[in-house]
Amino acid sequence: MGEIVLNRITKSFGDVSVIPPLDLTIADGEFVVFVGPSGCGKSTLLRLIAGLEDSSSGAIRIDGKDATALPPAQRGLAMVFQSYALYPHMTVRNNIAFPLKMARMDKAAIDRKVEAAAKVLNLTSYLDRRPGQLSGGQRQRVAIGRAIVREPTAFLFDEPLSNLDAALRVNMRLEISELHASLGTTMIYVTHDQVEAMTMADKIVVLNAGRIEQVGSPIELYNRPCNRFVAGFIGSPRMNIIEGAETGGQAHAIGIRPEHLALSTDSGHWAGTVSVSEHLGSDTFVYVQVDGVGTLVARAGGEFPVRHGDRVWLTPQPDRLHRFDAEGKAL
Amino acid sequence: MATAHSRAAARLTMAPAVVLLLGWMLIPLAMTLYFSFLRYNLLMPGTEEWIGTLNYQYFLTDPAFFTALGNTLALVGGVLALTVCGGIGLALLLDQPFWGRGIVRLLVIAPFFVMPTVSALVWKNMLMNPVNGLFAAVARGLGLQPFDFLSEAPLSSIVLIVTWQWLPFATLILLTALQSLDRERLEAAEMDGAGAVDRFVHIILPHLARAMTVVTLIQTIFLLSVFAEILVTTNGGPGNATTNITYLVYSLSLLQFDVGGGSAGGIVAVVLANIVAVFLMRMIGRNLDL
Image (cartoon, rainbow over the protein chains, first blue to last red):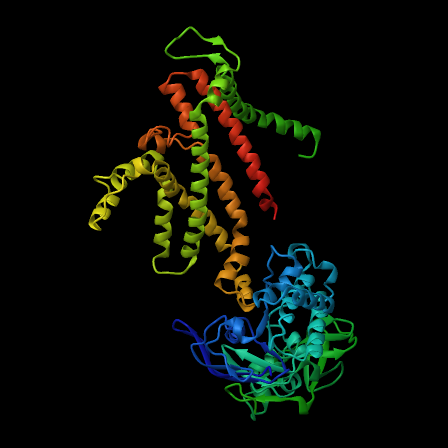
């Protein structure tokens, strides 16, 4: 029921084309994450689906019906905004009830639905407060509550966690994932944070300059990035890219992820000097100045006791090497 | 400002300003209060004597007082209603993107910089005049009888003139408030199924409540003392039709030379203004700590 199909959709502001022709199908019940650097058009794409922006050409089908010219309210979608966009003069109860009131639902049904949503989101004791008296995480939950009472065909999230502190972000990430598991509704989630994308998504859509670079499950994108952009964007720290003689002539550039470089203090494929080592306890990230290659990052599980200036050797796992041609496409 | 020493120094340095301000306010008030208990007529110099509350009795039982009170309230209420409603309308229009918006905004503000006397004269002689005025010319062009605004509907005409002067102020305050409204909030309401009217009622108006309060409070202070517009257009007439309390005080003191009675009227006006202020604060002041 919540299938969303974009067919040759484009968007330009004046002469500036933000989204060149783009096709995308989002299956019912899928958790899709749009990810990309800022200014890549991911928010614009979400707003096109929401109906907050008119598409310049192309068609949008939601739930089997043509929604290209429908106003936002009639698309059956609910959106959670980056700024939460709560109504400050209304209590939490009235904020959550607002879409139902606009649908002219009767009062008893509204109360029932609001109570139910508040229970799911642990907001019951805050129902009579105003948004100004709530913390960031609670406000986020009110915004989600306002979205779920409408029982939409799909949820749209526009960078909903970027205003929260790191610990809260991890919590809310889990809560949204749980919500998706329990509701089973289609969700589209926009973020610039690849960790959010990797942890939450069924399907990731990597965007760059309005174009879709690659669509796939998180592990597919991790294992088989189709180009250098996706390879660099997915995974943290970034994939090491090596150009020049070391590629052996078969490819323009080779890439190896930090976790696929074996570190050794006595022997290996590349020799280099440690410039920085980051000891996280669970992992150690070592930045190595390799002779004739440049700086490579390697990840060692657990503690790896090296310091600035130490001599180390790196060995790539040969089956984990990525090869790219001159245009950056994976070979 | 933490130590006793710095607090004392602060008081000392503030003292001249405070004394000056207090003197500026208290001396005229005290003199008016004193005059209001005297028989003080400019035509009979040297006969000033203490007459107790007689001035107040005369003033408060004067039928002109009640007419003036009614006129004052009608003037303030009418101008407030028109400027707030008109200001919201104009602010909504000026918030839309259109070609030449910057210049139009500037022009909308312009009436505020015209002196009250000048604007009243322009309205009286160039717009509302039944022979030479623009409105009369339009009416004749349409084959209608020209309407003599200032004699047929004098108070409404003055409300119109004063509204024209204060509309820019209301528009300016409301426009800035409107611009501070988060666009995402409007979009959220749109997603929630609120149409244009619902968005206006449930999102925009509550957001403007504070600005509307500010406009109402500030304008009330100035509108209670409207004077120049009345003096140059109708002279308070016909009869007492456009005499407000301010004009009545002027007419008593300087047209009838009864400074004592005028002073009593002035004190009554101060008391009335304070009553209005308390009412306003009670009624809408809670909007200020939203």
